[in-house]
Amino acid sequence: MKREIVAATNNKGKLAEFKKILQSHGFKVLSLTETGINIVPEETGTTFEENARIKAREIFTLAKKPVIADDSGLEVDYLNGKPGVYSANYNTAWLLEKLSGVPRERRAARFVCCLCYIDGSGNEKFFCGTCEGYISFESKGTNGFGYDPVFEVRDGVTMAMLTDDEKNALSHRGNALKRFAEFIRRTSCSE
Ligand code: IMP
Image 1 (cartoon, helix red, strand yellow):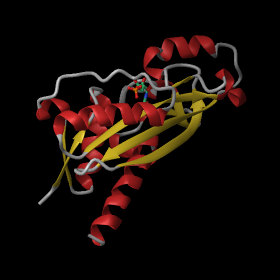
Image 2 (cartoon, helix red, strand yellow; image 1 turned 90 degrees about the horizontal axis):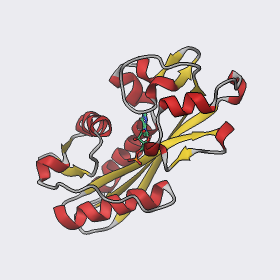
Image 3 (tube, protein in one colour; image 1 turned 45 degrees about the vertical axis):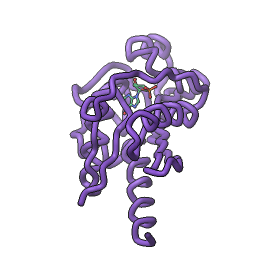
């Protein structure tokens, strides 16, 4: 029987990635809607870990099932790591404006994803992943969500120009979810 896990996110882009990646690892992923939960946890933390934990705990209390929550964002070196945990409050237009006139070699950035997993007994564990790249000079591509159209994974190719599978194979969330799936595989072998 497939393991059920609740994906504690209201972000459609994240949910699609959770479903695609975790289903390929044998999970049945339930959205908040499918679980009958209709709340948006308040992100009051100052780190990715804290916010992921807040979301996972709040949903676990209601769902009483294994939960996985993600907090993620974009760290731009030229902006001293901003927008970071506050990425959801900004957008690509703001970012391109902030980096206007900044040369390619000073546009390095990374996506960060921190997952908090809470198992059926309430034990928690964290899995993080990053993806290094550059902020492009203009928006390119239509796949993905958020900052994907301005995040170059290699010369001239933004995350939004990749297929879902290509993005998941190299993304911060893909890396963190692979670590999580490996953990589950290891620990269920010893159960
Ligand atoms: P939060 O984790 O709900 O605080 O939101 C993170 C924000 O970071 C999202 O709303 C996006 O703007 C951005 N973000 C996180 N992951 C990705 C991604 O995979 N692609 C593009 N933007 C992302």
